[in-house]
Image 1 (cartoon, chains in turn cyan, orange):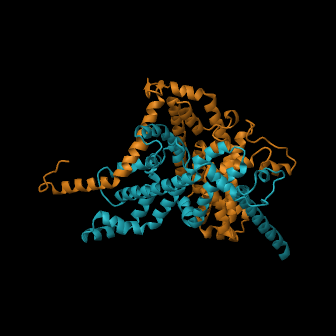
Image 2 (cartoon, chains in turn cyan, red):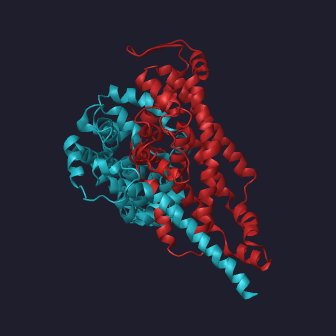
Image 3 (tube, chains in turn cyan, yellow):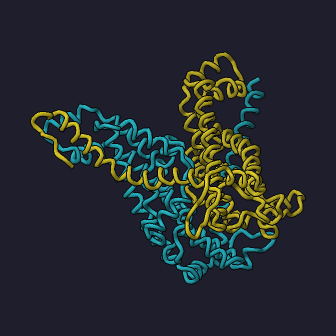
Length: 279
Length: 306
């Protein structure tokens, strides 16, 4: 009796792990193949049947990539844009969330409703006019042209406001009695108390900006203002049959985010699970 | 700004001052929102109703539904809608089922839970453009791993990316792969919220694992399930980067894998037909609004909340 019951149980466990491992390998496979191919010679990378490991690890592929296209410049551009964009987005969000959670003013409900409604508007709808606006402002081919239109996110404001509301209002009253200004209260009390939420917003915004493609593609023309994603696209058209070089280029775009992810895994997963946002 | 006499209307002045201060805090967000969200939204609605548009002078004329007629009658746009239907008629159910099974398995007593979670979520932080280029080679008809894998089962090589009939299926497979991460994480979060008591009760009643899943887990997970479905439907309509990277900037062989957003981008950026692009964008907006309204209605009426 006992034996009979145990066997299906073990089989079930075995199947469970088999399924999970097979799935995990499917998830990892494109990444592994990308990294391994980046170190192969062209001949090795298109051999049939495919070979797993390069005979000699061709680190020189990366040098070729950086020599052919200004990936160094793309990398710097992306870092600058993602960093500045994140800093500004956080400041904008913190200020707005503070007004919506603590301060009392006329039109509060109206503006909050308006920001919530913008969450529904797909950014794809806005690119047409935003392109025209940015070009009128003379911002084509500039960092601010890429950065500024993405700064006011109804979602981030909504999320941070929720956190700010959890700070007991009594603290605000006490601070007021002690003669503490709103500005000081915000940065000395509210922000430190919500630093987890702010960190999550920063990380999510950084990843989104790093991976953003369509908007930077539209507003940049000159190669020295390209970001990694758009630069990679142009590079691929030039190196159309050199799969090993293309994979080295893809590594340069993907691997920094993988490292970033491994560092901030918890915050990223919790942030996405909380917010339910995609892309 | 004129200063009101402070002595008499002290409280009114204070109120005004408070409001004024609040607006200083809001100013950056409001400014960006007005200029880069609200204004383009209003503008796009105006542009969609132009009957004529001159791109060079940026002058539109007339008011009517001509642009909508053109877009809705455009075979490319119809194909874009059809492709979207394929993706969420086939791709979405498959990815939901896989994601649900994986989330349930990770949530059961399993070793290396964290490792599995980390691996399955990896695609979420990855640039679709960059990993799409990897998939372009995996789909390659001669050197690609996918055809190599299929050949082990005796399936002849398929021209995934150059056959107009297959292109949208390559996109669907890529979509399933890249969308799993998001769904698994949300399902896991939903599963972890379910109270252990329900499972204990089911066990005491002697319910089988399968019964427990369908009668306990699934109903209690329904808010999450529904939310994921709606977000994914909206995402399916906005599919764009996947196409761009798989077909290096094209919409597949003979435009066969075109999507709505690709259509908008192409109309605007390559063809300079702003009024058509706007009309297509408005149609997209209406679809997404309807989906969101359905979501709100359904979740109010039918969804179990614990």
